[in-house]
Amino acid sequence: GAGVSQSPSNKVTEKGKDVELRCDPISGHTALYWYRQSLGQGLEFLIYFQGNSAPDKSGLPSDRFSAERTGGSVSTLTIQRTQQEDSAVYLCASSLGTSGTGELFFGEGSRLTVL
Amino acid sequence: GESVGLHLPTLSVQEGDNSIINCAYSNSASDYFIWYKQESGKGPQFIIDIRSNMDKRQGQRVTVLLNKTVKHLSLQIAATQPGDSAVYFCAEIDNYGQNFVFGPGTRLSVLP
Image (spheres, each protein chain N blue to C red):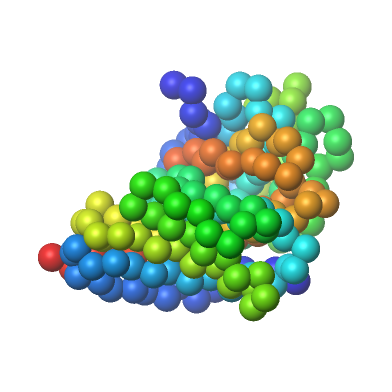
């Protein structure tokens, strides 16, 4: 399809393990966002990529979290040494990135459960 | 500052009634606002947007109102239907960046 694709849709891991979550944005979208959504709560901004500019990492909760975007397209969010409080749905979104506009198109999310 | 919080209020309405969902924002520099709908197990989906040079915008069965004086945004849904049951988020973006800040969300429950 032409939407934002995220994988895996569900991930169960043990405390202390590393996980990688993948986001494939809509083709041609220059802006890519990662958000975290804990159960029954709002969207917490994590990181934002815009073209070739340095990413806005201001929302990353700790240095265990990192993200990269290769070739201006696919992005990977990595969580090292996972903790139980990392359990949440991780949502990726992309947009055309034109200044002053920009409907966000969201993926279905990756649900992470840390045991 | 950000208007994101951790509390998720709930609004229950009877099917066929009108719904009004409110959102407060804190950044007076924000000039673009969007309402999103999130159904269970899915990502948020765009409903309607509004720019700061407008105070009202209408879509199909939905109207967004913007009051810049008190930094308040509302979403009105006419003739609410069971399919409208979801969590609704407002989001703001300022003119100096691309970062969207989401409100805490409101859960809308439509009663038969």
